[in-house]
Image (cartoon, rainbow, N blue to C red; front, side, top):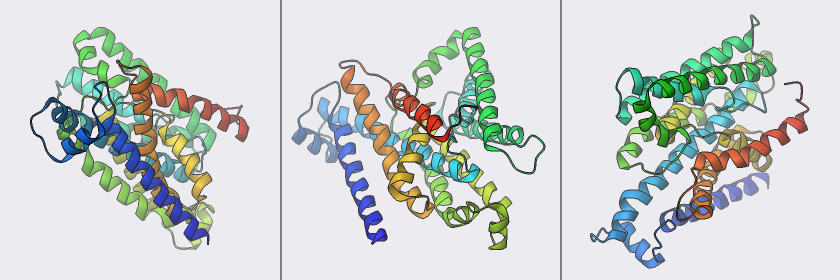
Length: 332
């Protein structure tokens, strides 16, 4: 019965995602009727409406799907890997690591193409993840949850200061970076989709393959080893998956916070702690959240727009506070 209920929930989440995708293609600053939108999805007749749909709204929707999957699955994976309910790519410095690397690439390497952004973002995300883990260990055999949160906050502050310093010294870099900084899925084209999709797909596949061993590690490292799970190798692959997912999502959409935190707790409520279910839920619900936030940003500020990163921050900050109070983590 539980399996049927969870499978039904996945089907419902898929239908909601389909609806949100259709709304994302349909709604925008320029009103377009549903029948014209549907026709433009399949045929470009050269009309302004077809150009808007195929060159702007469809890539925007696809980037929202990819970035949402990357951030949501990475959030669930990171919480499972660290056994920390506050773990999030943004809160642990991974997102800002990717952002700082992209800023450095623009300022010092002259990179302006997405191909370069992706590689620098992946390297920055990996470096930040490794540094936070090492600081969280503090000479111990395993990283403590509270130390990792504090280390993530410290690393995030340093990286944010670095980004600000570069932008203040280099106005030309600021002009390139400012539309990306707040986190947005607008203004991307299909080239961006093609560049980041392989990283998101590979990272998601790795995450799904790690569901069973991470479920076992939730019982403790000693129990996991007794049941035949290679703890070090499992965490290494999980770190690789988080780096691929978060780095590619940040390269495509900029630093968008709180998506992983919101989705990780939502999927735990809907599917329980079993990663074999919570990861597929995350892959469906996180694009719903990101595209839904993007739609809210379009509608409440029309005819202008509110960047999706600002909307997710407005939603995620109260949830983060509620989680802290519920878990009694005021000492963090």
